[in-house]
Length: 149
Ligand code: ZN
Image (cartoon, rainbow, N blue to C red; front, side, top):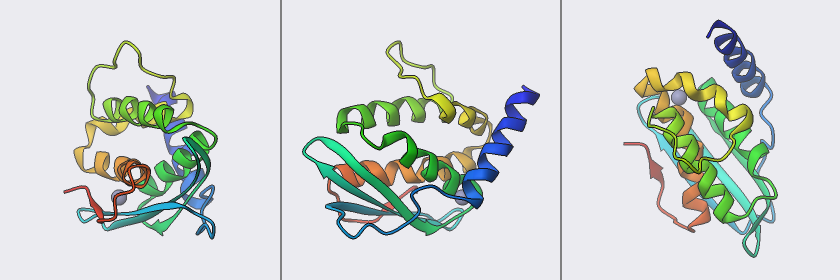
């Protein structure tokens, strides 16, 4: 458990200081905005879809270390995936951070597994999932701002 906690802090720190795919996307064909009023996190997710495939994904925003790191890791994980794969990963991740039993067909979350510890902190769950909810809104082409409340 201590190892996991250390790894968690290391990865969160790395991704929050050095977020991957942190940019606006000029040729995005989908985007959505999210806001977590409890913490003040704001994020915009940009997608370039090629049919059903996520050709490119990036994000911009201002938020705490957890929301930034989570969005950063999301973009790394989802590039090249299909919409269906992305939604499966989202559902598995959501179950992990809310402490629900993993589904039998849960996908391998790889590095995202470090977020498991977040389930002890309900307020942090909103930070960790903001980017994901926003991503889903972008995939579904929703235009209203996503709120975690
Ligand atoms: Zn936050």
